[in-house]
Image (cartoon, rainbow, N blue to C red; front, top):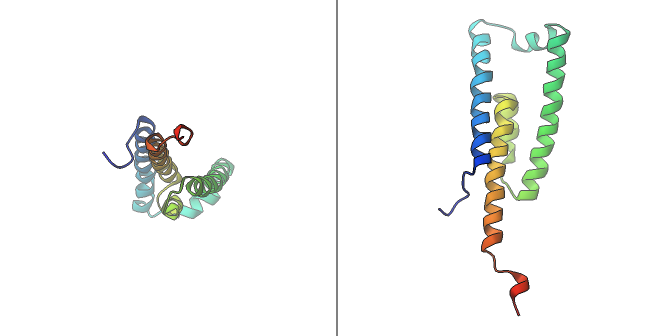
Length: 123
């Protein structure tokens, strides 16, 4: 296999991403079918929901920063896709998906480092 491998951590994060996708969209579809005011429900359903809203928004800001910094550090391309997925799908999907791809990038980097000739071994 020439590409990055799906190690255990990458598979774990991919499963979490799929759970986040199914879990959030089950409720999103219910809200659509019930003709709910999605944003209004988020903002006007009381202090507990407002607390959760602020919690998710702050977590999303931190996740975006982490995605940008890590993607630059690891040379991962198209980080904007994960960032766009946050409001369009769910943070619960986008962040674990990014973490799965990050694990693959780390595995590829480790494989490349292992395959590279050791600089100290050269005469």
